[in-house]
Length: 306
Image (cartoon, rainbow, N blue to C red; front, side, top):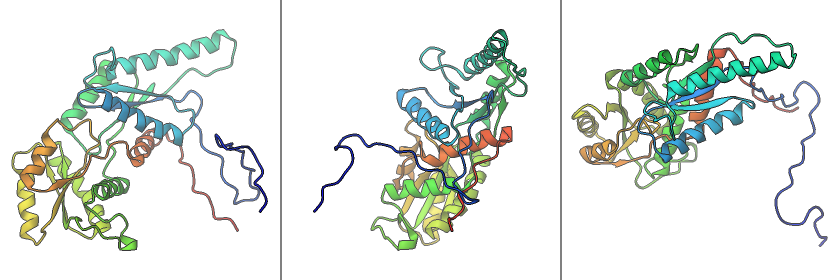
């Protein structure tokens, strides 16, 4: 048997792929336009190392999808030291954009004066929360910049996918319905838990319908921050025939008050999945909000080769 050729074992060597010819060649990746506003992620909740790590992971996903993207993270409850506030980040981002323009002018480059928003603020929220969104708007106003604020990330089919994955990771749902893979502990009724009152419950219910279609089990939304709401929905699901329930947080994570999820799971008497966290769909939805605001076209899918 002949010996393999190539470099000895060790770090893999990445070779450039040849560019395909013809109309079905792989499209060149979209990059952020030069001078585009920064994407500023507005992170709710108490700042902590775990929160910062999650936010950085989400930003990393967005940057991998749009090379050259200028990004920053601002915290609603930051301290302007280890965790910069959203207001301070927006002011710094605007000043840095002006400085880059002035340096280019001083160097004799032909540049256009920056127009439009200085930043696009994307709230790290799966669903609407009027109290948190008021604080984000106030921080944007107080920054005295031309930053634009996007909507929250959901409802969206990608969030239903993320919920499905989190449930399957906890052993509470089939990982792949198409393969009829069964889990002994799979739930036959899902409580979709959110925060933010009735508006948040309605929005979660839309994604809940998509999740129900994926799992072929009933899914009902309830507010974690409304006394008795989780228990009432649990009783309703059991009354309609569900026996084994699961609690699925329709939340990224930082916006979730400590201890609330465990208390809700105890109230409902069921197991609980992890929050959405830095699931890849979260990063893609953050980027989608940014690109939609600026009118940047998404990368088209590859055409099949012939």
